[in-house]
Image (cartoon, rainbow, N blue to C red):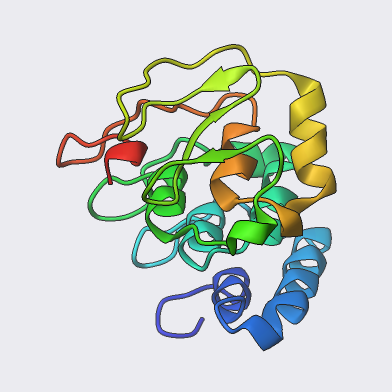
Amino acid sequence: RCDGSLPLHTAISMSGIPEHRQFAYECVALFTEHGADLAMKDDSLHTPLFLACVYNAPQIASFIVSKPEGLAPLNTRADRAACRALHAAAKFDTVASSMLSKNAVASATGHIVSMPGKTAVGSNGVAGAAAQNAESNKAVQDAPSQCLLTEVLLGTTGIEVDALNMMGRSALHI
């Protein structure tokens, strides 16, 4: 442990440094291969998926949600403000406009508002969530470094788009 963080959490936090992103991804893959718990919370109540969102690491987030055990914390409250991974993605997701995929539409704040087959509550008032499909889920996982982190999460079956934090805000009201 390092300051209350497990090795997996520490590896994910290294992805916050662009030069270490690939190394962080390889560490996460190695730890997972050797039995790291993808649902374990650190002393700050952060799950690995939540940290991947905080550090804007779509490749790591995609890896985590591609594992059955990585889906368990998908909608788990992962910090002291009861935010979930999608809340963190909405707050920290950034990408150069040239990196936006053809399937994503960004709002003025840079948050995903809609994707084919899905709609999320956004600052523009669009509401609801349509059915998830395996094809879009696979497409997001095939190109995680070229898509928004929010797109990775919205493409994951079972995501709660309208979950509220302790302040009564959904992810796209952040």
